[in-house]
Length: 59
Image (cartoon, rainbow, N blue to C red):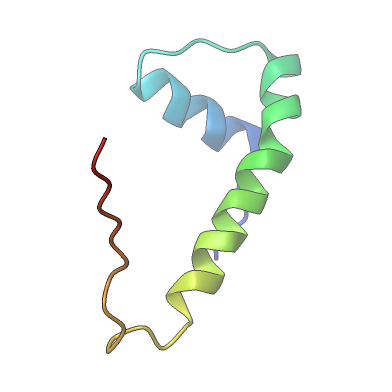
């Protein structure tokens, strides 16, 4: 996985119309990095034959 920088995060935020200060970006960067690592670990699991979970509730 490509290393995420504050500049890359700023570019992605701006593409979505969000302006963040350097302090905000520095605070959010570790959280985004953890989320990316978690998503990468999910893609490594052999889930091709696993049915999706569903939940049905009657209120």
